[in-house]
Image (cartoon, rainbow, N blue to C red; front, side, top):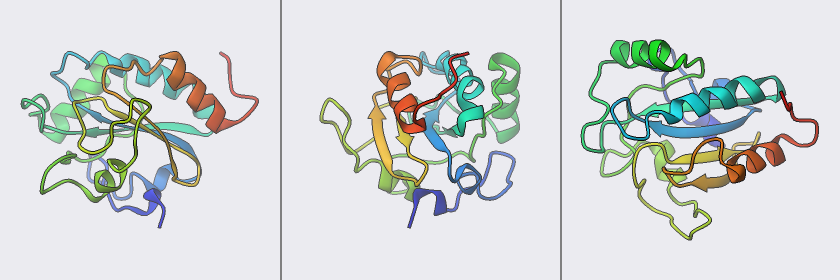
Length: 167
């Protein structure tokens, strides 16, 4: 089973946020509106705009498990992301990424090891996972790694293959 087969609704309740990304290179990010890393939404949206024509998407997963930094309702989260950061990429319903109620998607993701050797629990908001078109986890990036860091860009471009947009 592919990660893209995991059932998960969009923030507005529309089903299958992951299935809609099938056959794309996808960056999965647990997000929060009141975190010191929240400005990463800017770079995430820039990635969305830059690489979407090549078959790329970002998906954000609001999570309130880190010091209550995503307390809003779905409507408040959507409004904040749209108005403050111009977010156009899809957001899922609010989920848990750690603990007993960890969403099945994150039960799969946390088994992947990042470049520093970390696997297991999500460390903080804005931890990133890059998926290939087939749903295979290709890379995991720590929360403080900016979405436009060279290693993230290189991994995205490698997953997209030659001919990625440079605009």
